[in-house]
Length: 156
Image (cartoon, rainbow, N blue to C red; front, side, top):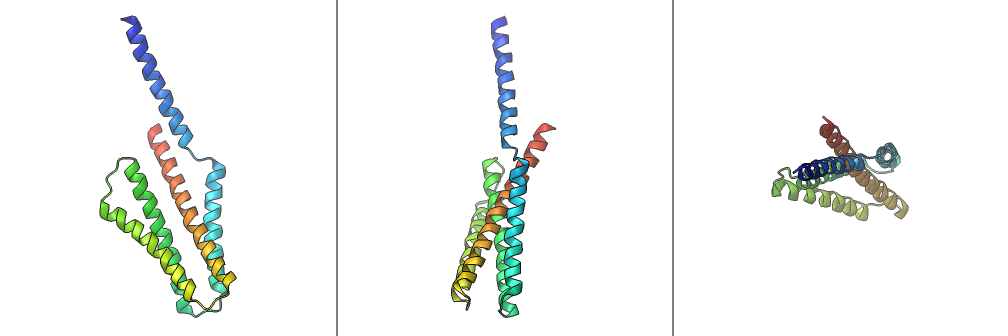
């Protein structure tokens, strides 16, 4: 009987250690958090400086700026819905599908806009790369934010 109680106590202790280890291993390092925020700011600022200095009409600049904002919101929405599904939170198929559709649409709209733009190939590549960097970094920032919030809530 004592062995059984000791065994159950040991299993409970191991489960707590595993959960604590898992929570700690999920916590993003300050270096990764800084790198994510830096990449997001660098991508967005570079894209916006490129637009500011571009020799295009104001409505074209507005189009590309709106595509950046649309893309950033869309990828954050995808990351949130994927994470919610993984954590067992309810996510409707409609929202999940729309978030993926808008992400793909923002990328396609940028590609179509750049394809038809009267820009040098290097400029087109610059916009494409800064847009991609911004989208990727916004997913990383959102993931870091969710991880930190999850760890803080589980410590309470």
